[in-house]
Image (cartoon, rainbow, N blue to C red):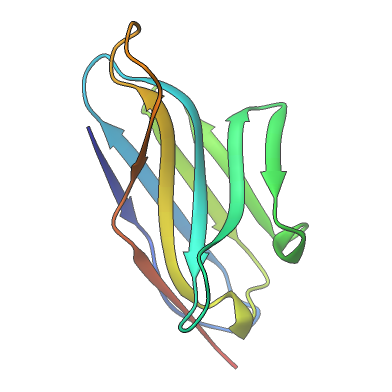
Length: 120
């Protein structure tokens, strides 16, 4: 099982970016997917998490600006980030809680980080 993230980059404050993360691996069953971020010198923090269309959580700092969505047919999660601020800068990591097979215990997987830089 691998998670592949993409979509980071450099953007001016007020701009937008869209991050994507795909889970590869046959037979996987995904419970939830999410995005975390880590700024230099700070701890990794949860940005957004989605288990289903009705089970979504956002950090207070991104509510109203970020939207997380999930494509179950592609095992992909997206994070649309609008009205970006310099404090949104950091390395963004995707995360999945999944079972490799229906009979397997749940495990947590991480993707490689993707850098988001918001200039003022």
